[in-house]
Image 1: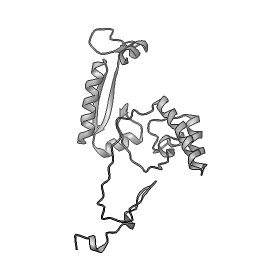
Image 2: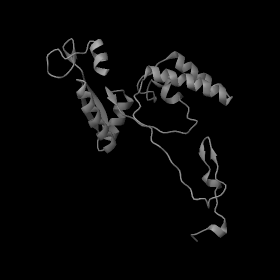
Image 3: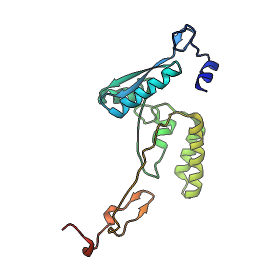
Image 4: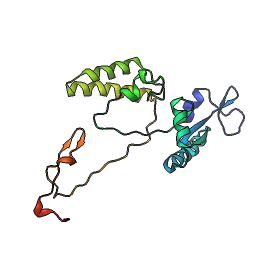
Length: 190
């Protein structure tokens, strides 16, 4: 399907070299990664191999972290790979709102969608959790359709805890380790 879409968009291998081109310009781009970061290097290799099958030349472009960060902040890259984490109640404003494109904001791909901005703003003002979730679901449908990022994976997270621990509660913001205890008679380590 990818090859069909590329053909329809005018990206074809016109000279038989195995690489797609359009109006004489080869389909080639640099993929900025952090040098020495093994997962990034592995993903870049995988993507390069897969893109080559479709006639696209992905060039891994490694930089030492401080240079990578500066290029990221100044938007001096063709494509890159990022990761972030957050809580269950993470606010999408910092990463997705168009006001965060300028300067050193975290909307590094320049996602600018007025409806998405409005949904984020309304969700931030909405106290009712059910209503807020509906707004976020609408926002996520926009992200799915527009695809400003290609999401590779979500790291699974499992938590195991010995049943000796008491007062363990799972909240929307995570666990409450500061409130845990092990009854004296069940303590193994003195």
